[in-house]
Image 1 (tube, chains in turn purple, blue):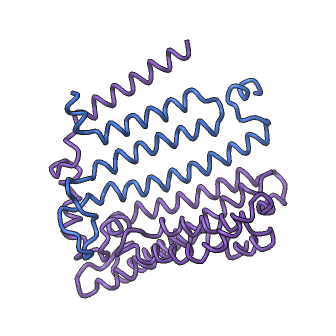
Image 2: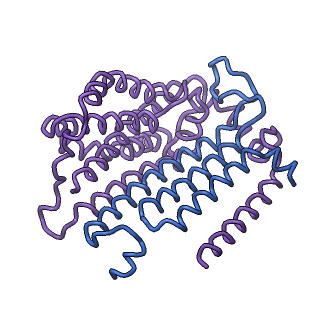
Image 3: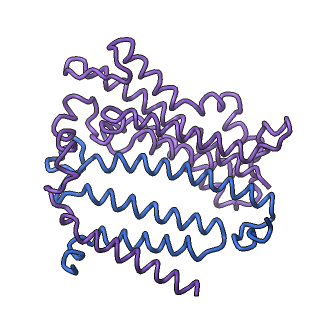
Amino acid sequence: MKRALTAALLVAVAALLLAAVAELPPHGSPDSPPYTHVSAYYLEHGPDEAGAENMVTNVILNYRGFDTQGEVTVIVTAMLAVLAVLLWTGQAEGDRPGPAPTATGSSLVVRFIVRVMAPFIAVFGIYVILHGHVTPGGGFQGGTMIGALVIALTLVLEDTRSAALLPRRPARLLQVAAPLTFFGVGVIGLVLWGEYLYYPRDPSSLWITELLLLVIEAGIGLGGAIVIATIFRVMGAQR
Amino acid sequence: MIDALWQNLDYAASVVLFCIGLYTVITRENLIKKFMGLNIMETAVFAFIVALGVVEGGDAPIAGSGATPPFINPLPQALILTGIVVAVSTTALALSLIIRIWRQCGTIEADELREVE
């Protein structure tokens, strides 16, 4: 009975969605609605007025900066919720994370490979963060790489040494780095030009815009990496 | 209808992926597997929206790298970057809730949890 209901539901959903999809403009046509409205403007004027050559970065940080500020706030909020769910025991000492997962599970090969790869992954992650405005990449992508590196190192190092990777006090401050940099850049715009998250648009002061975007990228990368590593550490400490 | 679907094969593929995710969510009792199904559904939506931005013969939307118009639409990519980050956040929160449920009830099978109350 349940199986028949499931099959009926799936067939209905699939039929409905496929019928809708068949009505859409042909895939890849330049006349499709998503391509002809604001996107055309972004593509035409983006490189000249928004500060970054990578137009995805322009859209994320400049044209739709408010959206991205909300987004980085969402990550931090999710991290806080994870901490609250996992660490809240109703007692005062529930405040501190337990020890990180131990290295006993990983083999010699894994340990060796991670140690050899670590500097290269770190350099690549930093490159992706700082070059996000001229090449594919950006704060979120690079931050994820750095966070994954911290996770990999946590898995292969001994408890004491992996705890030093993410010292608790600086980590607590850096967890909110992304929203704070956004807020700082927004306030700079407010003070200098009278609008929150304003970036200068004329070609002579475009370097200021580029610098501000770079600061935000760095903040997002750092904050994102720390948030991911923190979430992993707290989950890994659960037994 | 079949012709139109063939033309929009990318979209149809994400519909199939969506249904696979929905099937997983409905049929699996293990909460982690249920959430994996939800992640598959999210991925299907992301793939669909990014595919909306593709232009025939388009280059990556990066000026000054030797790429020439037509460019791929940057807007869906930017929106989906936001979506992916939110998906990661919800995944982290859901997994931590599942850990909590396991600690509290000793099981993460939805049918067993119904009896625990």
